[in-house]
Image (cartoon, rainbow, N blue to C red; front, top):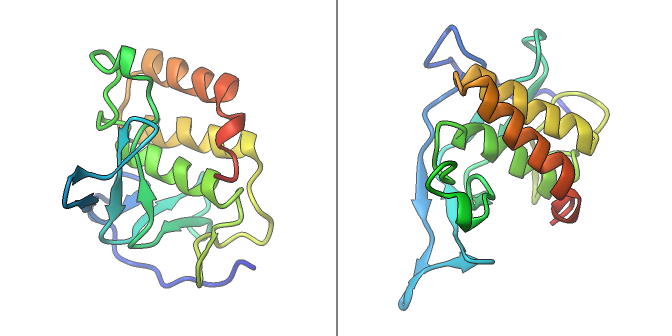
Length: 157
């Protein structure tokens, strides 16, 4: 269950994210690793996000966690690329979806609150984190609406 996690210094004191996003492209001898047509990346350094106004409510995505960044359909990549300004927010969202809101991934517990996040809360955190990254309100609305409508199949994957 959730417990106290060490607090790292923020790189941007005005934002809710701590640390730089450092990713490693996953590949094999034939080329990049791909799942459902999307290139896979591993978080190389833990990525921390403060939820809401409570400095003690944290989500920490551990190093080694695998993500496809924003799970955007290829047809709209010219407008909403997977690695757009929403990438950090998408990784937090992927982590919550992969763990069904518990933050429990291998031996890591990546949330500090006692109760798991619901799918709706995970989607709302995505929107909040996009706002923190200065993603425009229109883009936030499109991406948030898309995960609310089509994201149920990804919950727990």
